[in-house]
Structures are given as C-alpha cells and as structure tokens.
Image (cartoon, rainbow, N blue to C red; front, side, top):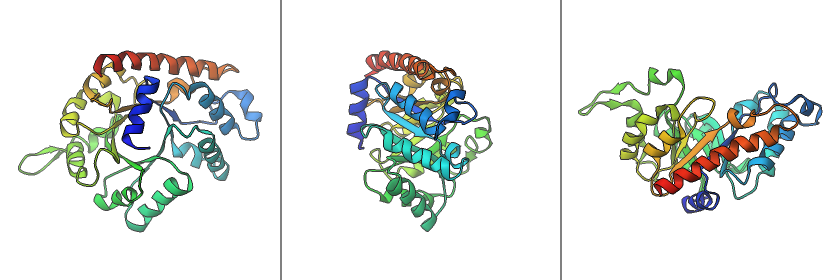
Amino acid sequence: MDIAALFGQIQQKASFLCVGLDTDLSKIPSHLRHEKDPVFAFNQQIIDATHDLCIAYKPNLAFYEALGPKGMESLQQTLSYLPKTLFTIADAKRGDIGNTATLYARAYFEQMSFDAITVAPYMGRDSVTPFLAFPNKWVILLALTSNTGSDDFQQCLVAGDNPEPLFQKVIRTSQAWAGPDQMMYVVGATQAEKLQEIRQLIPDHFLLVPGVGAQGGSLQAVAHYGMNAKCGLLVNASRSILYAGNGRDFAKEARKAALQMQQEMQILLDRYL
C-alpha cells in the first residue's frame, strides 16, 4: 500500500485508527478457550467488529511467538482473514544487520505479506536498509517511545557542533535512507509535546503513535501537534479496544470503544485538514 492509498483509506473512513492485535491468551473471554484456536477466534471477532472503523492492524509478534508454532499459525490465520484494503504492521522491533536483517524482511514481507515492520535503528544504516529493498513495503523506525525507560538513551544529547537528542539524530540521519513513501516513525503519544519539533524535521512522513487509551496519551494533543496535510498519523490502540469487555459480548464492547475513537478522529480530521 502506497502513501496515496493510505491517505485514501483515512479519507474514506474518516479515521486514522490502528488496532493493535496484542492478543493475550490469559485475557480473552473464557468461553473462547474451548475453541480449536482461541487466539484466532478472538481476533476474528475483533476484526469483524472493527474493520470498518480502522485503517490498520498491528499484531505484536511477541504475543504469538510466546505460544510457539500454534501461535504462529494463529497469526497466519489472522493475516489471511484481514481485508486486503487494510494496512498491516508486524510489530516485531527487529534490528540486526546484513543477511539476518534480509531474512527477517523476507519472513514478514514475503512469507507473511505484512505491509510494514517496526525496526530498531540502534545498529545503524545496515540494520535498516535490508528492509527497504522490498518494493511497496514500509519500515517503521523507532524514534521516541512511550515507555518509562525511553529517557535512558533517546533523550541523551549526541555530541557535535550542534548537540541534539539521540531521537532527533536518528530521525535526521535516517532521512537519507528512504523518503516519506517508504519510512514511518514511532512516536509515543505520551511524548506529544515533542511532536511539534519532530514535525519540523519530518513534515511529510507518517507517524505510528502508540500510547493513546490504556497508556493515557491524548488523542487531541497528538492531532494538534502531529497532523500534517495528509493526516500523517496512525494512532494505535490495543488494550482499550481488545479488552473493553470480557464477556460473550466482548466484540460489541470492542466496537463501541473503536467507534468512540473513530468519531473523535473524524472531528479532528475536520478541524485540521
């Protein structure tokens, strides 16, 4: 999916919602645990309830890898079930070099057909460029995250003629590797006050923004500081949608939570675009 198609989906649905499929077997409703594949049964109902309200889904690979081969079968079934018009993100946070990076890219882009993958840039250019060799696929580079330990490194000043925080150095340097049609950046919603300076560095790139919902980030602040002329935002919500209910009507409750976010997003799109 290219950037024009992505923006087209945003316009069509009046939404920039990404639903994180962080499916925790211990948290899904008890009646599903008797299914042959409980994880897929849960995902299937979540997708049925939300696919018209969002433009992307982001499975967190750890939740599937932790279940071994059965978990990876659940992931593949989930990917096969998703409507092809939706943007799919492998939240894998890979970050190795050379042939290893190429093999990771082949696994998620060719074998599983994800549209995008999250990548950690700590090892530099050669940990990222192998993923960029695949046409019509996206790299989503970790830049400024929401976790409490993000200040350990991301805000540290990098020495030079004009010292700058490491996250800014990552953004500035990586722009030479790919343009806005192939690279996005992760910026946590709890770092919304930094979005204004990030937008000065990358006015045209899409940002994947986790942290709205259960983590307490403000959707209004993210839109105010981060939206550009083509929206430029994919705001992810996981727990606040997936586990909005825990009974037999869990999918209905998930839809209510997703619909509330979509309606707020529609107001924000009307305001800023």
